[in-house]
Image (cartoon, rainbow, N blue to C red):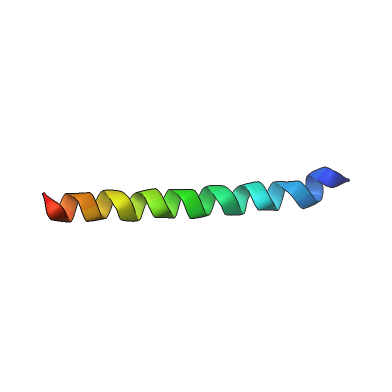
Length: 32
């Protein structure tokens, strides 16, 4: 099943994007 191989990639992508956004927001908060 392709879903079993595809889903972990989506989760990894979301985790990386969320952590990037969190770091970006933290950086913005420090500047202010």
